[in-house]
Image 1 (cartoon, rainbow, N blue to C red):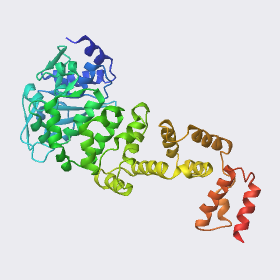
Image 2: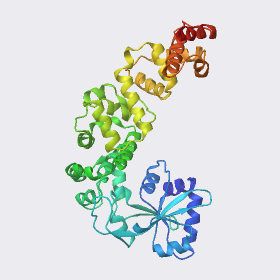
Image 3: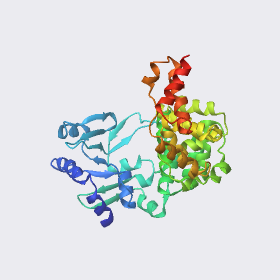
Image 4: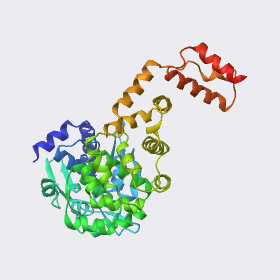
Length: 399
């Protein structure tokens, strides 16, 4: 009996949805337990976004009980159960896995017992189950003890776990940062030894973990982690500039949209075009993410010597640059007065004196955008104040 965990679960927005799934399985005498990270976070009192469910029903039975199920992971004994309100649960059969052949997936899975299901999981704190029917926390591998000790340790042999799925090495670092847990000695040694194996992990999967790591906002720990330092060296072939990063104390400044991560990457002691190529080709960043990285580089390398009116014009064109300037000013890289001055200029001159359409009746091609920028810049600098003055400037260019 775990009163705190049970109470937290009952208050969760998905609890009534869980009861629906549990009831349908119960009609056929099958169990329905919550598994993995959700149990861990309920125990710790952390926010839980979704629930992974496990059952002793075979996949064939699940498809009969839930004909609406989406067979996304059917070959691995996992089905997605959509509910009428739009929520989706992952529902899996207790299973054991055969040898992994590609450092990511088992070659085959088969139905098994809860104990065998627990033994295939990555870390002990993620191998817990909650039996709502009997109000019992089920722990086959010492996960509760490790939660109490605040440590991460692999289930079974760490070398085996990391060889099975190489991404687990980075997940170890991420969980440690998120939970503020230490890493057990043998688990850490195995992760360091096998870190070069992440070469086989897809860039998309690595970048997802990178962002989850950044979301922990625990950079003091992460930057001091040998595992993170080796990870950066493995991906970018350079050392972390620890003194430079710690000087700015980035752990104390909350960042949105992974600006702290882009700041770290922009500070790597490597040609910026090479860093960008790795982000684009190896880690497969989305176009918007690459733009954020480019703007961070621009702010750090070029913006300091620009007139405030030119910076304001850029912020107006690329609003995300304003968030970067806010972030860098909180790090002490820019004066906070710069951001205030930009905001004041945009407040004082909210609209351009002329539009591109008005300019196009007099000028053509690249001259349109160039003149529009020139007029807006002069307006922000207080050197143009009326539409008439702006139109005269345009007519003069036409001559």
